[in-house]
View (cartoon, rainbow, N blue to C red):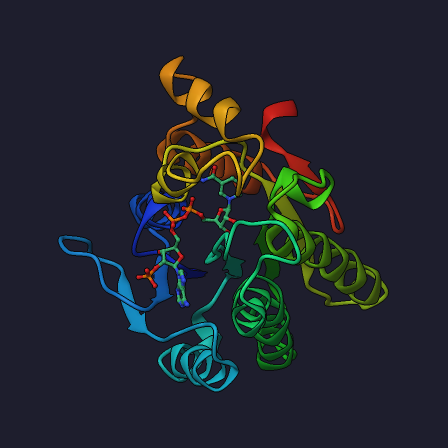
Length: 241
Ligand SMILES: NC(=O)c1ccc[n+]([C@@H]2O[C@H](COP(=O)([O-])OP(=O)(O)OC[C@H]3O[C@@H](n4cnc5c(N)ncnc54)[C@H](OP(=O)(O)O)[C@@H]3O)[C@@H](O)[C@H]2O)c1
C-alpha cells in the first residue's frame, strides 16, 4: 500500500494532489479545517495553526495504518496561508504568529512526528513541503509569507542533511508550484496596491490566462515523485522543470 498524508487536501493545490494520488491507487489522508464533498480519500479535521491539533491528527492517521502493509509513505505539507498582506509597521502584531505557525512550525512539527512514527519502516519515506518563490523574493507587503516560506526551505535542507546520513532515512524536498489558480490567488488580486505593491502583476497573469491549474501542478508533482526524480534536499521550482 502506498500512503499519502497531505495537509490542506480540501481545496486548491492540495485537493488536486489528493485526487491525483487517489486515482493512482494511493491511500490518501487529508488534514484540514473543512471537508470537501464527493471525494473518496480520508479527511480529518484539524486547525493546523494549532500544534496540539496537528499532532493529534497525524497520530490518528498512523493509528489507522497497518505499517506492515505500507510500501511507501509520504507526508506532503501543503496547507498554507498568505496571512495579512501589508508592510511591516502596519500589520496586526497579534496575528503574525498564526501564519508562521501554519506555514512553518506545523510542517516541522508534523515532520518530527512523521520521522519518529516511521522510524522502523524500511520503505520509501518522504516529506514534500510546498514552498514558494516568495521564499527567495522579498515582495513588499508579504513579509510574513516570505519569512515563513524561507524558513520552510531551511527546514527542508536541515532535515535532508540529518536524514541523508541514515541507512533508512526520510527524503525531504521542497517544491515551488508556480502561480496557481486557487483561492489564494483570488485573495491576492483583491488586495490594494497600498498593501501589496505587485498586485497588478498577479491580475495580469490571471487576465492573460498564465496561471497554472491545480491539476497541472498535481500531475507534475506526481510525475516527479513516481519517476523517483526527487533528490534529498532538492528545492524544485516547477516553472523551471
Ligand atoms: N496558489 C499559488 O499561486 C501558490 C503559489 C506558491 C505557493 N503556494 C502554496 O501552495 C499551498 C496551497 O495553496 P493553495 O493556493 O492551494 O491555497 P488555498 O486554495 O487557499 O488552499 C489552502 C488549503 O490549506 C488549508 N488550510 C488553510 N489554513 C488551514 C488551517 N489553519 N488548518 C488546516 N488547514 C488549513 C485549506 O483548508 P481549510 O480551509 O479546509 O482548512 C486549504 O485546503 C500553500 O502552502 C501555498 O503557500 C501557492
